[in-house]
Length: 227
Length: 247
Image 1 (cartoon, each protein chain N blue to C red):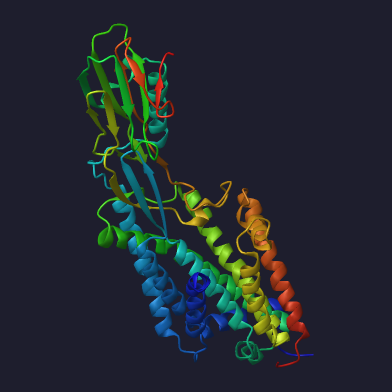
Image 2 (cartoon, rainbow over the protein chains, first blue to last red):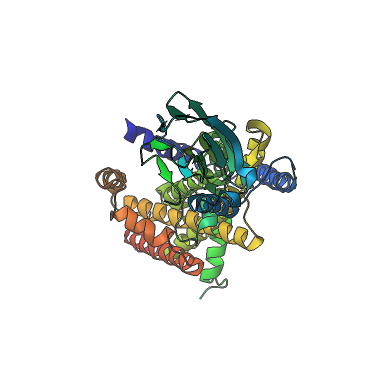
């Protein structure tokens, strides 16, 4: 069945072209008019296209793929070296502060194993019985357009644990114009997405816990910085 | 000795002009095939999706890729039909031989490929304008060539691809004229090759694709396209000379 579906458009066009390209008497005025009219429509649409392409809608924030990638790397590098003060504060999307007087804490991440975020933890220099958490997120670049999910993760405090839950997924639908494949000839490889760009931003949750707090956690999900 | 002299170039030119008039219906069929391609491209020619933390992204891409593929198929069919008896016998209206008849057909196919390639590339603008006004409210990217040189190169590439594919149609048609069973053997062999070999690594189709379409140098790509088309047309002409008179 799938083989049939794969060949169907090709066979359909083959049959259609064979039927259409039939020999007719030497009277092709109608054919010429049709072709000429079509050519005129194509020329008009190309002029219209460049008018549309030249329009500046001025509403969308833009970010290049390179910048998005650099910003994501900068965020990760600064956080992993424990230099959270170096992180661009525009990327801090949410902050939490929890009073915590127990000596032991469990960090639970029930849904972070698939499409999860990095969770980093730093020990403070004092035992102030306060746990701080920051959620950072750098923008994604989708064909040059800046995109960010609207929702943030949630952190819930129980008597002996912090439960970190993923945000509900935002479904982002885009339409994009792409160059036709002959324009990519000469690139190393013709690929459908040769000139398209999709760079995802980086996300992380940065926790600061009291110096002597005993923390139980899954080391694959939560990592210490500076240790 | 004759009072009127003719040279080969003049005969080919006259036959070419005759074919341009007689086979003008191929251009109206081109319009219909391309409009069909544009219509089918409305649902997008490619899509890409990914999931990340808190996001599920899906991008639908619009381009005239399908129109160019359809135009190549059209080129193949045009070339194939030119080799059928009904079309070949048109040449007998003129003082002709097989070579001049074939050369004028090749010239006609090249003209048709130019018309097909240019309109196929320009149909991308029509598709994008229609998508902009009818389907989507926000479009990312323009999908336009970076500069006029890239645009001209892309258009030349489209023309040569269609001409190259049409050379296969011409050869296939001539093979079928030479030996009738080829009309059944060739499509069966092609389908069989696609089914048996699939799209795996190292298949004949993949080697063919890599040799032609992954060529990084534009000059080499153009040379391969033109050179291969010339060889294929020459093979078709050789077969044509093996045909009986008016067969």
